[in-house]
Image (tube, rainbow, N blue to C red; front, side, top):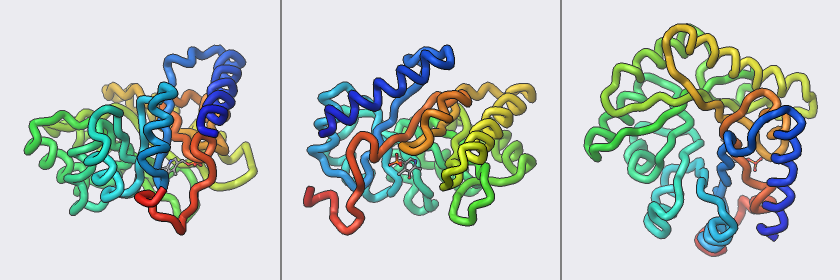
Length: 233
Ligand SMILES: *Cc1c(COP(=O)(O)O)cnc(C)c1O
C-alpha cells in the first residue's frame, strides 16, 4: 500500500510543480511516520524516502535507537524544554522552535554534542486556538535574532500549519503569509531558505505558495490508528 500511495503522491507533486513552474527537486518530501512502526518506515525507506518526521520526543528517541541515522529525522511537534535533548540527539532538523527559552536549551544541548542544529521557527498563521507557534511579527524577529547569535543553532527557515478547514482561501493565506514573512526577514539581513508547509490535505496549495518542505503522513502511510502503540505494528 505504501508503494502505491507514494507513487500517487509523487505524481501529484510532480503535476503541481509542472503547473506552477517549479522543480520537484527543490522540495523535500518528509514522510511523517508518527504512530507508524519500524516496518512502515523501512518500507518507505526502500522506496526512496530519506526524510522522516516525528512529533513526539520520546517516540523519536525510541525510533532513533532502533533505526539510527540511516534516515534523516525531522522533529515537527511541540517540544518541551526537558525533552529537547532527545530531539537534538536524533533530529537533523527541528521545525517547531517557538520560544527563546526553547532555543536556548536547544543550543545548550547542541553544544554538548558538538553539533550544529538546523532549526525553523514555527509561526502561527491562523487564529485557531489549537495551533502552536509564535503569532506576532515582533516576537518572531526577536527570536530569529536570538537564534542567529547562538553558536550551535542554524536558522534555516519558517514552519507553519494551515487552519483545519475546507476553505482553500484561508489555507492559501496562511501559506502566503509565511512566505511574505520569510521575504521580510531576508530583507532585514536574514538568510532563510526553507518554508516548511503543506500536509496531506493542503500540500498542493503549499507548493503553489512556495513550500520547500512538505510534511506528509496519511497520504503515504494511511490513516493513523491513535489507539495502537507503534511498537506493536
Ligand atoms: C501529523 C503532522 C503532519 C502530517 O499530517 P498528515 O495530514 O497525515 O499529512 C504534518 N505536520 C505536523 C506538525 C504533524 O503533526
